[in-house]
Length: 389
Image 1 (cartoon, rainbow, N blue to C red):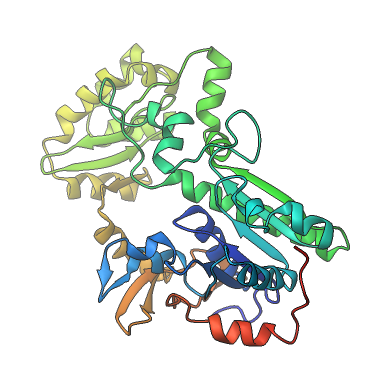
Image 2: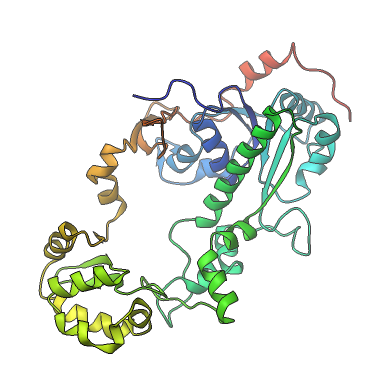
């Protein structure tokens, strides 16, 4: 069962985006019913070249561009730029993730559309924002993870700097962009104006680091990397068993008492170093050593079978193969079939959200480069008006 009417049905989005953050935003809007037209250069989005390639088509690109139309325009050519303007004039939303100033130099900036199209929602995603001392700088997920603090708390204590394995900067920015667009669509539908949305990846990364920034504000100290551990709870990290590792999160006194009973390690309940969550966190290195003396005597499966039924949050350290095969992934209908433009059958992760108890069904098909150029421009011709230079 899937919902019949998606909440963004009828919304038209023109996407001038490449690689990850902007395309992810556009895909989220498409998943919820928007008609998204992706404007690409003759060379195409650079992610089209990223492996893995299935018979020449990038599965990375497919994972972020499902359900979109692809229109190829050379925006440096005035006539094709005017076609892009005409497409935007028929749209509700423009999303772009180019370096600040690039769209204005092409004649496609907010400075051009704003005075002419007061109902347009114009969303720009960039490294540091559209203005300010670093506004002109570019950036990628790695460099923003570095500048916004994420790498300073990722990895083992004393180890080399490590980035998060998932591109959290790109996808957090895309989520903030999609949420902000949806919020302004409510305003427009209520009779209000559109507007300009400025999504700095640096800022959205700091925003999702609320626990770390609040630790700094409260103590004046930089948070430090703790590996898989938590600064305020223990036991709350990955632990070694006889045949591998598992994660255990016993972040309150009741769960802690259950761990001690099942380990068994009841003598730890009388140890003053471990009397409260705060004390256990402060002494978690010693605590880990003591718990692992018990954990290494049995297998990962043993401990999961021991702690899980008792209601203590725990999990194996899955690879993506194992995560995607988890029975809950099947129940949530996460893995969807996908057919690439070259006919190759593959799979993708669909929309993770349910609305009204039903999984949001998505069009999983990604577009070939320029696949929709002719039909989109043919449909535009009767509607297009001459654009000002």
